Image (cartoon, rainbow, N blue to C red; front, side, top):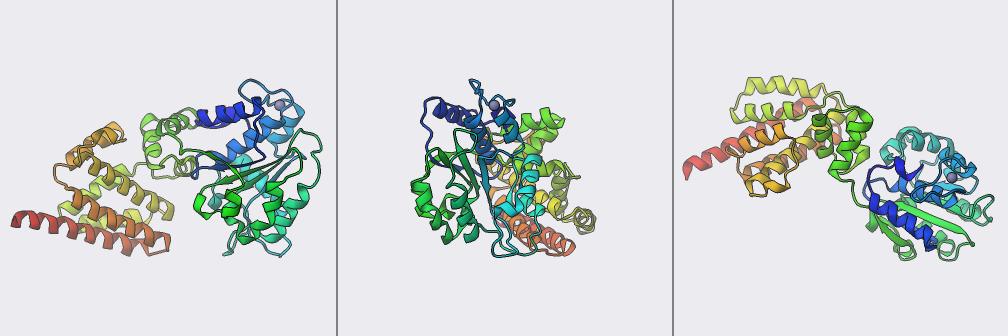
Length: 377
Ligand SMILES: [Zn+2]
């Protein structure tokens, strides 16, 4: 993985490269960033850069023997640890290394859900077990074979449990030229004992423009389609790539007419909508609800006079502005609450037909109640 393959995050890339040039490489670092921000590919690119035999001013060379092995994740001094679903008590990350290489090379922005798909997870809890901690200690007790550094990338230390304390000594006093790169999403779920022993590198969510441009350039999306996904995914490229695979792209064209039907209290037509949505599949339904929630939040911003913060494509902005003529902030918030509830139930396998009918009725109730209240005053 080279830095140039990673979307955005230029400031972080520069900081990492400078730390190598100035010989300030800390032996235990925590890459902390939200899902889909690129913290895992950044850690891998950084490790590749450290090991590269022909470092360029702003990237690894991509051609030396070290880089070639790194690109396949098959360098003898590169190790990975990650949550997995143990079948036997002595399973370790190494048991699943083939799947790991395949998953990362297919999508360096993978989420735990995507990773789960590569494993026979059944209903097991992912974790990093004690056998794996012992394996890490063993792997890191040897000197590097080929490179200046032996590097362990530990993805999602949140899944270490208390057993992670077995690693403290090796994190604090590693062998010379041994590096620990931890890649995490939630600081408050990491053992404090580990947190206090690492240098923190905070990675921000990706910028709206970076995701949009990436989708246009690399995935041949139109400006409008890219804008809609970039806006929906909240800086999470993994999420954006999942949405690309969705069949139903324009949630806007489904959501706004639905609200209009509810406004007009048109029960029969609402049934048509319910039929259509219930055939969309669970992931699309969740995305659709998320779209609705984001759209109404933007309407609230408009209503609150904070239009400069609104990130909507032009045609959607126009609709949102029209909508603010008939909608108030409490109204929008009440609908948001209903959509959030529906999202919660969809995740828990509610029957979509019953659910979307119920949400529609709830929204009709919210709207009519508010209209009546207005008439009373
Ligand atoms: Zn190289």
